[in-house]
Image 1 (cartoon, helix red, strand yellow):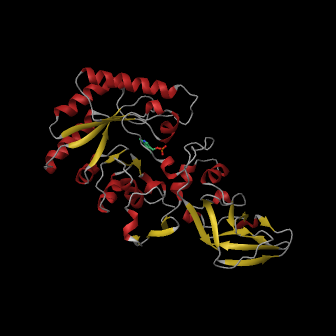
Image 2: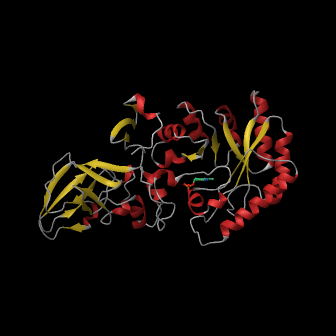
Length: 372
Ligand SMILES: *Cc1c(COP(=O)(O)O)cnc(C)c1O
């Protein structure tokens, strides 16, 4: 499963879903009905599993979008069945049972699962397609809690099996479990963060061959000279001590370039590190320029991510503000156009007006190139 919730972890759900489908993903994962609906509107035909709980008010839209629903209690199962009859849908709704083996977020407890499975099997408008659980600390390979969760999961599956209930697809592993616990892969893994080339935990690098998909780039808007004593931006938190060249970069916290990076982060220009000077504003940020290089308005600046640049990785930026790469990635807002590249060539752009393909032929072809 390619997990494309939260706008494909900030990469754009539509294009991520299309590439994942072309590369052989069997399922897509979303968190909300509207995310699933948007993928259907974009013409995505793969099975889509809603990974979060569904509210009864959203059932009609979820079923019309043919989303597979994750169910953890009989009440929800009955509500889906009722809605299916009301809508007079031609084929049964596929559901997956979620078993709570220790995450304590949602899902049926192991002793509730058999009754739930029977309730689903008794409903002609429902079809039990899968069973799932979710790990709490798979990013800590030394913890034995993942094995404990897996043991509870397997015990519950054996109980279902004894009663003749054998769902088609059993799944548990997120990225961390996919990497750290191959013994718990089951029939399908649910890959989110690692698919985007980002590590599930800041301290554990990904295996060789993974590259970050996202590079955040901008262009120099203005070059200026700072005199000793000049202060930069709101609050005057940066004061030049000697003559210095600086550049204005048109990215700010409204783009997801976080205010917490004020005077802490850096960007890359001419492949050299250029420190953020003073406060990040809503739409702009000032960087100090390395002495040796000549910079002009319009020059490229690598703000974050990518490979082989002096720019910080998303996980380094996350570390500066005590969070994780997930939060940094999903934080880049739709104000930044997504420029999809294959072998350095732009193949599509997604901006406020929608997703536009540049070279039709290449994007759906199977290829080992990642999008950049
Ligand atoms: C988001 C999510 C995933 C993907 O997690 P990653 O750590 O990004 O791989 C898998 N399963 C469920 C239930 C999720 O909500």
